[in-house]
Image 1: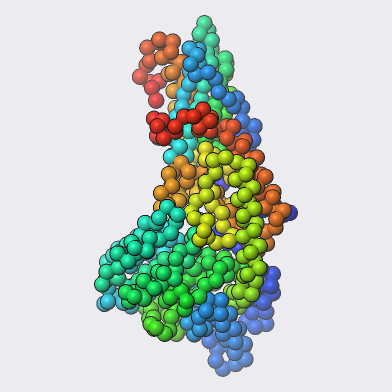
Image 2: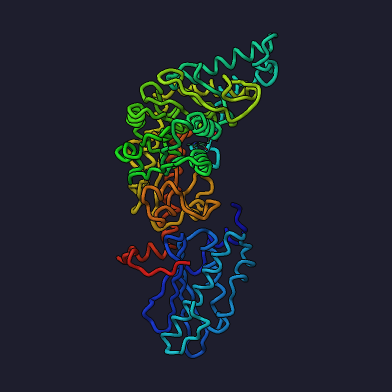
Length: 136
Length: 404
Ligand SMILES: Cc1ncc(COP(=O)(O)O)c(C=O)c1O
């Protein structure tokens, strides 16, 4: 299969690889997928609770090149956004940006799920009521 | 070292230059139809075909009269299985095969199932071998054929063919073996192995694509087949169609070279394969060999690299041609059915790589591939949340995953 240049770039130079301390109250962690399905994404955000701005984002992904690229791109997009803005990120944005073929759309869906799960985790820790929409 | 390095010799092999050289005159000056009985063009072509027949027969311990030429092993498997099912329909309608057979066998059996045959798909033991007791128990008085491959194309595991042949003979059942991956790599002998029908193809043993053969036993018992192709009655009526003379010359030459060079070549490939394995195992934790190493083709290594997904691994080693059992690399998005049949969890199947070494690979290539694999696996493990959890002592089987 031929990969787009952007997927190859994220694969070769993944952005924001790493882990944060998931016990911290200003960190939200989302882990989605399953090893049996061939992809697992862990996405973490660190939020400034005064401003609601995502100051840092990190990921680790087990999965194909498109899954790695989708989560790497997601961390780039998350940084600097408010939590509410981050919820606007749609899997189709990722598909378009990375030029994912139809068989790889599930990678972008997983990345969107990971974003929502991370925000959900953060909001839960902050004691905020979780809206049904953010539950993946 | 020319790139990409080709380590996918179970998929296909390059044509040996000596084979090509033997073939060339049969495209041009010796272009005759082997069925033309009344002029020299035909005689020359027929002589070449008969020489090819002898070379193939010699490799597998058969008589040249028992060789039927086909377009490849897919056709050989179809002809053997459908041909027996039709010819022996009065005797019975039950066929026994195994879950790890090539699609050319499995889908042929599925086709027959729709036509009223009963098929038993034997499960495999964890090491990839057929359970002989299970095979014995599966035979009924309606069983007409056992079709079990000689060696598997993914894991290289060699079946206990001789024992299967004995069981088949005792019970009066015909035995077909898809020997595509074994012929030319390890000794195959249809008499000693008790094989009644055997499939072979040119392009897995340094011959051309689009030509193959089916061995059909003529004595003890004399096996009969219903032709699957109607026409001029070539190949003793079993397979009509003008013979592919250059292809047959190539297949014959490939068999002769393979037979002559097998002892030296298999020892060399085994040493290279063992070095590849040893280097990977010495430098990487959490690698798993799929299938038994004890009964395996000398040129095969099938390994899972836990916590690293196969397609991302292939992407990182894009100057090396290998294949993976990962779902992402297949059209069906299902991981390898062969690995699943061994009881391997989907998680490990997704992380498997098949290395198939061949005649033209060198030790320098093995060293390069091993180092590249080590580098890419380490890099991807740094990226893998599963690796991190494993290192933190998390039992991954106890995690509640959000399957999608
Ligand atoms: C075990 C086995 N059987 C059958 C085949 C099909 O052979 P062919 O490509 O000649 O049709 C292959 C190769 O693809 C194979 O590996």
